[in-house]
Length: 624
Image (tube, rainbow, N blue to C red; front, side, top):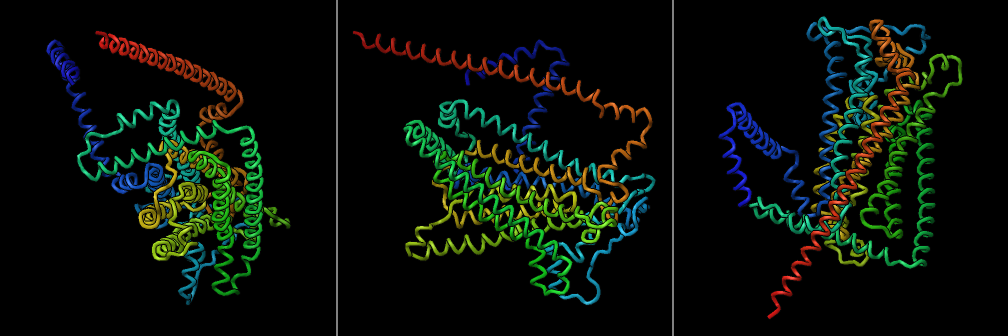
């Protein structure tokens, strides 16, 4: 503090010799920095669930706190995606259809298309309708919901005029899809880089991390006793996680050759079992989807229960597979003897592969039905127009049902499994019940639930533009469901988990889900023929065809520039320049790493010199 005061006095003395412009500039800079800090502090109090997440961190550790922070991030991201899709897609269509602000729209009949391909009559509810029919429509996305702005078929607009401004609706729809995918990618990468830096610093030197927690981990600005207690518990959980990992590292280092051979053999056997479980899940989903789609035309004569069962059969099988497979993986991982952090990562990777691959199998089954054509009339359309006159809305309905059913399962498990288990453990003294005990908050399973739901949202937003709004509401409610379940039915984890590695890995898993969402969306946009009876792309062979069609309307010079950018003559040099830049940054990072290692070696040498001097001084003081 004395050194800081001295430097401040020197700076104040130097100001006298500066010009008025430099004095004003320095004063303005300090004032602006102070204002920005105050605004940042004020915004931190407006942060969503700030107090709740801090309370969870103090009671259950930073590992579980990272899950709730991750959930908050998804709520904000889905809300931004909803604002984007509503502003670019839904709002212009509503304004043009209802003639608001002197607007209008046009529907141009597709050219060179067979008339039978353009027939689309949504089966809406007419006449006297029973109440349970509305419930069925609400849960399955059929009936009255099928004709709303929730699904792709509603946006059958080729051009909209907002006052005197021509709005290219098909191009806007496609660009909005690319925008929300790009926004999600950049946001996730930004947060992943921040988490990677923390993880890298922690993994580089465990002793340095330990010293930071012990000597610099406390926030001396805390004055509230409750906040101090929460911070104390948070540091305690982090130290427990460090000690647990060090214990396991020592255990691994002390293994004999016989023990290593036994563990590796057991791991190979367990991975064979995992592969068999995955194969069974995929085949079950494929058969359920094909059966549901083949019998979808015959459900009009069945009762309400059978109708709803057929509609939800693929979703039920997927949910069952998502529930059973992680339980099997969580049981098997105990015998593989990994560290808690790696155990969570491996379980997450296995389970995320199951959940995301299940969605892929469902979409593959749907597309195999959509593209199946046995007649010349069907081949003229390019897709199965009889079963799927508007196949994009059908895919959107499946994504909608998966989203709704996933939320129902989360709520049902909490109400009918978690709370009864807590009641039995606290009220019943039977040995089997006490052996089960209170449940721990399973971080891998809960993270997979929301990553799975987010992947559904990314895929389904193209086919159902308002699906992000449903996802936002869903995750907002799920936060409170999980919080209540955690506080009232769960016990603290026996094996603490560090948050720094968890935050980064959660985002990596989410990034994997986003990349896997690119595949079916890209295939749908660029390869599968668009519906000729509904949607903004009915005049184009595929959804991507709107891009070259729009470029043809540009001036000739701009067309040549764009074609040049897309040609090999530009792509090859551009790729070589990118590779050179990448190699430069890799070399620069390597040089920085060597400098850091040299500085650390100097610190170690200085530390030894200090210890040597202290020893010599102590010996000199002991001499008479």
